[in-house]
Length: 296
Ligand SMILES: [Zn+2]
Image: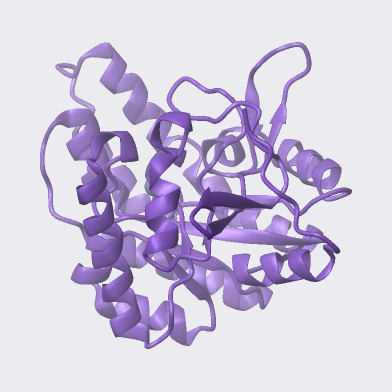
């Protein structure tokens, strides 16, 4: 089974600073160094991946975007400011995706087909965003977590790649995040991010082995999960004056970063990975009739 490897390219430090510490900080150079680490691992493993780029990173570091494209990876977008969709109006959402898409297409001269929402924030209350994506020429979205978590999730959504009918002849392909629900609970485990970083590698490997019997697994990570520089920036803010919850958040951001290069290398040797586009095309070629998204 061909699985998809995806990297959400955002500057972890400036987002954390704004969202958790209420302090606006410009996009930092750490995103460049950390993304280059990932590019190196992918080059060694001879694997192509999909990079969902945040618009503010593309504007500040255009040469990084060109380097990703020149390495043969797929470029898609992750919004512009990393505000979750429920914090944007429809007009602001449209303006964010247009700005990011135009910036990346101008830098690479290649069409952008895919989108991933910050923090998987396409849910029943924000599903209007899918229609705007289709109107703006996006072919696929990979933002829905088919579960119900505290901050995100669309319970009862299809777990498979599916075609979503948006009315008036508009459609979009949805590639839901891979989840496994723990038995007898509603607790979902995703293949990537903090789940990959904080748990031993064999947990994610077991889930992908189970999932890929029937469908591709979608694995995701972020440059900041590899970053020693970002860890140093965060350490400076671990003062005793920070409130308890913020200290916990910061500690969670710092933990287990050193395990990530090894875990990604193991994934690349244990499974077959490619870009979202490649995985979607494989899926389309094996479908006699297009799988429609089941949703409640
Ligand atoms: Zn993100």
